[in-house]
Image 1 (cartoon, one colour):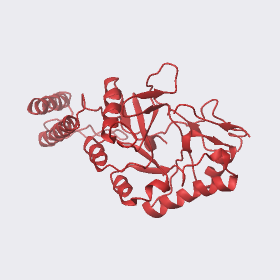
Image 2 (cartoon, helix red, strand yellow):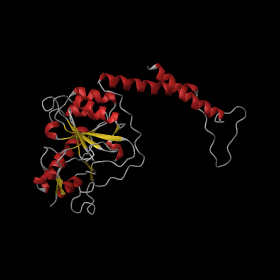
Image 3 (cartoon, helix red, strand yellow):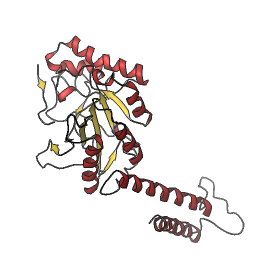
Image 4 (cartoon, helix red, strand yellow):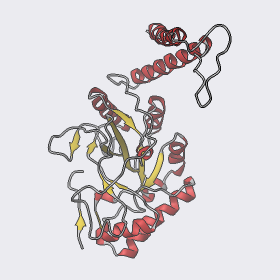
Length: 309
């Protein structure tokens, strides 16, 4: 049986500018006939009525919201010591991309048996990356506050032997919109286990997440990125739809890359871990600073992985 192993793991000016831009749009709409004086002209049968420019007050409120959002994000970036304000991702796609197993990551009978796809990148033309964080060892309240204030999406892959020390921490994470996914009960090297033991590890964690957080995950990541055919069969039986691995890993003091060019690419999945000063020379917020400073400098935004699956 083939085993797949991983070896690498000034507020006012902005407000005025937005209002001015929206005012120009509204003015253009009026000049072009979107708002007309005199008797109402009804459309011919089968035709759509001409659009009307929104009231000036609505434009002003919209401009105010945009300005307030930018100011809030700029203030959060400054508070958390970022070099620049993180970029906003595009809206989630209406049509989700087709996810297939990366070449070289297949097991015997992968496609024929409908096993969950194993992938490291999501197909997209947008300059976005996805942040995923594994295991649950470090439970830093500052990290939760940082991610909420910066409005950065991420996905968590949890192991019960670490999460059970404080289920409430991850409930707060879930309440902030974070998807909680499966990383097994005890984080073993799965290919060394029997099929039944692998199934217990995966389905058992599905049960824990459903009981504690209300939803069975569709995503599973095998510990160390290692799996075999039994792993994927067990994952499928436990309700798993996708097996995302990673293209890059970010630490508190450096990055590691899977690809030869040692760089980011659109749709890359980035891995990190819940770690603190006991394991790293720094904290979770330190890791996020390193992550965000790099992706923002290279013109990338952070999107939510589950929105693309």
